[in-house]
Length: 323
Image (cartoon, rainbow, N blue to C red):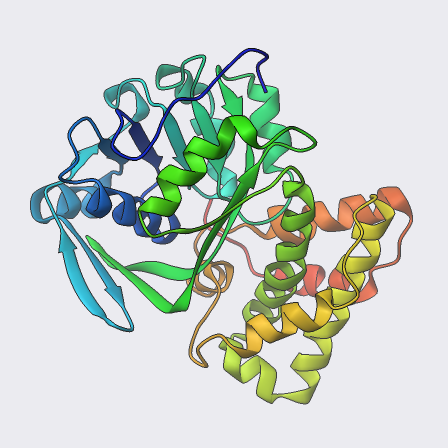
């Protein structure tokens, strides 16, 4: 974190937030912010979105659908690229992992020395790419818990009640970032600000990395995975392998970590799917390398055996993805 930087943002202040990637994650959390601060002078939320989805958002607003009902958030400012967004105080980076190399250089046009950037990708390795880009401002580590997707252009559908955003800078004081925490929390987002985001990242990866592999390989919903003894065993085995590797990197999991990860899956809607599974099943470009690929590389470097993860990685690699 830059020395001497003090963030003065607060709810009701002049905060400009740019949502880079308005898919299931960016569209949902950006929509929450845009709705909360739509009538607050000085607050601005800008979405970077292209194609039919961006057009629908720009013309008709963003429809957020939850288990409780639907609502339209309008009007919205939607632009096609970072160069059209202007400088931002807060950037929520919600593109897929495989888009990071192409989007990071473009973020120089929206970052300034006091910008705060929070990446929200699943998997491992995105923070290293972010730091290597040496963007102005503070690059945090971040992650979210939410089941959401683009149902159709201009419509984001969230399943279940979970919507949590976790962020911070590893081994750095949380104090300078508390105004960002307040800004997000005041909008109705469940927020955790931490000085050990890497630990949270591994804890989430234990859940989402294992579940994504099993749901995609067998083309099952979360509920179907858990009602089948064989796929349940595979899910647990991969979670155990992830915990072993994490410990060898210096991340200490709580004794109840695996049970809690399993509980998150069990409490998810029966029909819910993972974003990786949806992309994989549709033959779209996907994040296998950011999930199992990166994990297996770390395990190999540490000489930790991960046979179940490797078996699923080999199986999933048999199906080519769009480039």
